[in-house]
Length: 233
Length: 378
Image 1 (cartoon, each protein chain N blue to C red):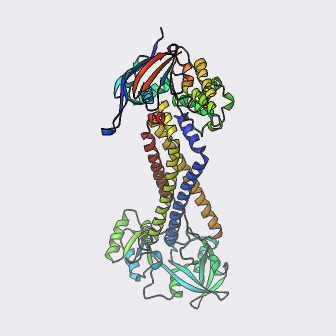
Image 2 (image 1 turned 60 degrees about the vertical axis):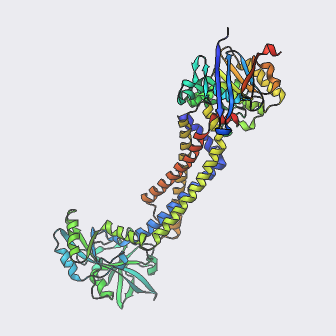
Image 3 (image 1 turned 180 degrees about the vertical axis):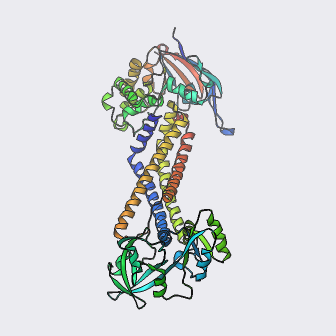
């Protein structure tokens, strides 16, 4: 039986005050296991990014609990939470957020630098991961000289370089064409996912649903459905 | 920590346009600040040149004297009374005044004349040519080899001039530590010759130079001189008094202060604005770093390092540029009154630190406020 990677229990999040107060997430619960790709899908404004942020230790829920591999992440203080994110979670942002003034290699090495690795050692390690994503020959280029798909792969290399067990992708195919998007997802499924890693993907791109193991649908801040991929097919 | 600083350094310097704008802003501001204050220091130093060059430990003068150039002659008994004060090792007169010479080529030239005590020659300059005893020779004068000496028609030992129908002869060429402020050549002679050659009022002693027996005696001498209706000040106090006069009673200090403040504000505005834009452009990246696991204090360190590095580099360049400009100016204008002092450098350094702190603060505020959640929300 697969081990539970993420357990979200009755998460609630409100934004604003007074008349502007909005219930962004209304009592959301789910479980995602190691070795699977878990999709959070729904229309814009459905609360999936808010839920993702609460799960990844970025946004504190108003109520509810998040346990990652059995640990309650919101019981940690700010520094512990930052360390937790650094060591256990890898982020691939929608706009990648690569530093244009650093080389591709230096961008990938950032998590290792934050983990206080020696500079040369971090670069050597980052180069290995650039090799994994097939961009070793682009190591010294600035990210803006790469194509969208290549930048996506650099962001993936940065996310996995510190070997986290939870990977979070925010709209990974939003700025890619259909073929490139599928290639990226295929790459994630075949090369990045393993039995000790859980991949969480926020998307509303139905073209890549086939790569999911589980899909959780959200609407107006509420979880409406959680399905296994086999059920969808 | 080294790795984070290296990242911060690369983020800063690889943004060549902004880094250049930041550096130019700070360099220019430092250049102006150091230049302004150096010119002022130069003027103050020149204004105190006689005090510096004579080097007496204590000076007795009329209380109304504000600068060394506007001495008010005192009667001879002042010197005698000062000599009788307990704690005075010796006291000698000094003549300080101006006169007009008629040079051998017939041209008239204003000069400063210092008349040294005939017995001790206290405060005599170091001679480059000639012999110190030659000052006692008939009509003997020493000419000071400074930036103004050429106004004496290229003087040399044996050169003659006319001073109030007296013949004067250059018997030595001397050098001094500080040049004068008013662009006139300086001549040294004996006190008695000075008062004999230069028409004066009833009283002739410009200053009484005092050597105290000990440091402890200084206050006692001051008290006793005060009882006589005159003032005694130490060398440093006299220079401070002259500085104070130029700073606060001539408008010069205020103007320099205003210019320095304007330079500071220009530097602060340019670097503050540019650094703020730099932070704004990278704000989402800093947010992403926070999301990845960077702690707030690490981001603060990065920003402070960036601001500090830029400020210190700009400071170095500004000081270097200023020194170069002063050096070049002095080649063309030997009497160019500008001196870079540790005080000036310190003032500019403090102002640059304020610029760095201000620039950091606005950047740090922004970065601390950004939530990683905002990065997800776009």
